[in-house]
Amino acid sequence: MNDSIPSTAPLSSSNSIGSILVATGRLSQEDAARVLERQQKDRVPFGEAAIALRVLTKDDIDFALSKQFDYSYLSDSDNTLSPELVAAYKPFSRVGENLRAVRSQLMLRWFNTDPDRKVLAVVSPGKKEGRSFLAGNLAVVFAQQGERTLLIDADLRSAAGGGQQKLFRLGKSVGLSGVLAGRAGLEVAQLVPGLPGLAVLPAGAVPPNPQELLGRPAFGALLRIASERFDVIIIDTPAGSEYADAELVAARAGAAVLVAKQNQTKLPQTAQFARRLQDSGVALVGSVLNES
Image (spheres, rainbow, N blue to C red):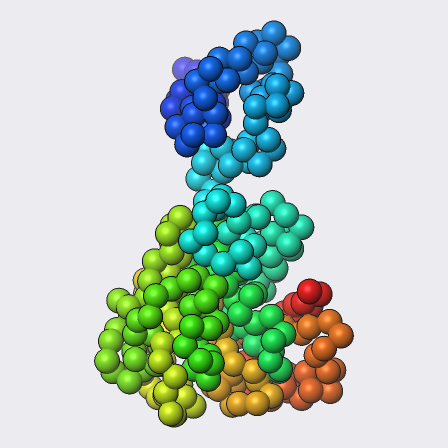
């Protein structure tokens, strides 16, 4: 009996770095042959040989590696989404690394502590402090990890076309406000091209009664249904110091991550907002300082 551990099967030729880059138009057949010749001569990895010959860049190699390991992100030439979604376009940048670090902490502090903990609100006391940026990018990095991820824009105060609709460049459609008003269901959430496993439910039309809509049992029912279909649900919210909406949403979620912007967010305002959340039974699982 052979008790040795079998070696991993080699990647098929169609999944090699060279094949991926040729298939996607980043490398010609002629240049691929040159790279292979250089690789064999110098006995170096394919990517190193290609960069030495100046037929590929490090970004090209990173792109091919992401395809090999089923790690989805978009090329710079793809204008499907806003460039503010750094995790979708520059996942290996410093900001991308920071976003993955936040994801890891949220997994450890919230999502992995109980299988029923699937919902997280992104909150901040004031306007333009980075809530939507963080919520959108967190949704991307969770999807890149293989989690079935739903991003809900619960900022029903902003004009149509803003927030997550702007970041993900979604067309005008029924959104959360319509769902809570009983005019649609979760099926109106839109899948994001190029990022498998990620769906976005935009805010939709601005209603005259946003706080009342968010306080309806329909919102809780929506989250229960979504929790059966998704592994992670991230909710964007309006400014917490101006409206009670964020507290309502965070209370429904059960947990929140607090965003503060450097040289803008005031500490007393933040502390007061955090106390209100905790008094509402919300678990504050972390805070993020937006330095931009």
